[in-house]
Length: 327
Image (cartoon, rainbow, N blue to C red):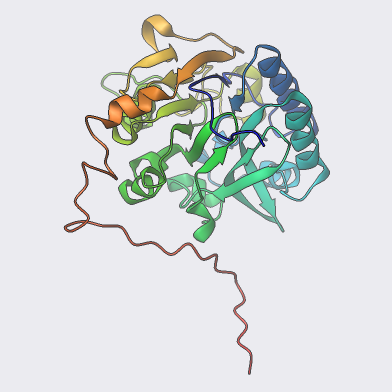
């Protein structure tokens, strides 16, 4: 019987690509192509950004109601129990690679910002929903219940992998819940992000620079590698969303995906000198012993904690809209 202990060093990939906007069949085909490409380069894990399937609904920041796009968005969102998800799991198994997927989940006629983790055998190991959609996202997406408190998954041949979505990375308690499970690799997912413009009224924390900073801070806090995945936005996406000239996602952006070490340093991608280009896989070898090295200085849920003073309580139960009590 073989050991399930992961190798010390593994190769991973992070996408920096444009989604197939509002088109689930094309999005699934592109996802499978990228899974195949990453596997051919020896990667054991590939990470996709927030709502990779079927693209982030950028129009919500310009006009909160757009019935035509809203209907199309729901119709093309991914159901967990579906032939499309089965195809993605089969692609993971065929290519012997784990997949961290960001997608718009359809349940009934409601949608949720969601993430899934598929192992290299094609088994769906984890699904979760974003705890609370951010600001205008609430015009489209619903809240999560206990499923937002997902388990960090120990993937054979990879390590302990967890995931959060976008501004969940400013939720201290949610982050601590992840830290407590001993993540070695964290997938931080984001939509397409605009660069910050000095003097603008917008938040730096919503910019490519700000979100990359949050991913780096997460690495430092957790002593884990962070795969920070963003989307590319071209004129094609802007035309689909009807956002040309808008202050948010109204102009093209080449993406700002990055691979970050447990001490916060950028290993691949990001901004500035290491800036990525359109439609590019970021690939890096991760030495998981670096997580231990970082924890010798600070382990927020180990020797650097004070549970006699501060601790976290949580309720992981999923609450439905109907609660039946037997007589």
